[in-house]
Image 1 (cartoon, rainbow, N blue to C red):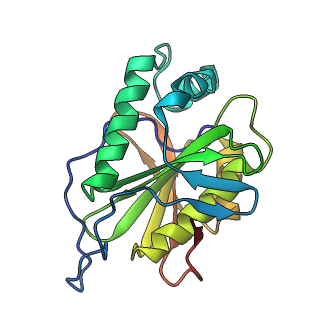
Image 2: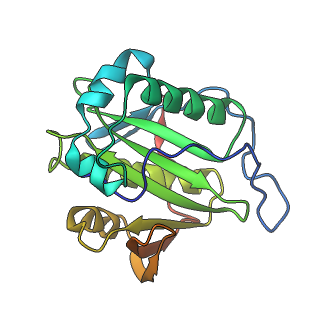
Length: 207
């Protein structure tokens, strides 16, 4: 179930500052936290899994993210991994996680939080081909919402194509509600889903 946004190049390392004036991130993040929840583990991407990442993409993934007929390559995946790692190290606005099966540790998808300068965030998530329909995206998004709340993000958005019913169900299960439609610069229509992220219970378990 590909959802929301694609593997875009990250923005520059602008540090978000909420309206109250305090830094959104309390301490510089130099390592990706490992988050554990029901049926999923979120952790750092590993260059040894580039082939698994590529194998997890299919036409559905490419079409949802607007790549089709192009496909990712080993070079573009390694560049994305490096970019995501730099964002963690430099306290940048992108928080990207590899989603893993908690029993085998196998890569089953990815999810990402993009933090705005106003303390809001946009989420994206996608499950690899052959791994869909097992609850991985739902569980990953629940963890990502908790993580966002734990670092001070106050409001979240997800942008989902109207016909992407599987992704819409995932967002709705995580407490997102429809807040209107919009058309992006390429002419693609999306539903804007939003939810409050502040005070979202305890932070996810970390290792």
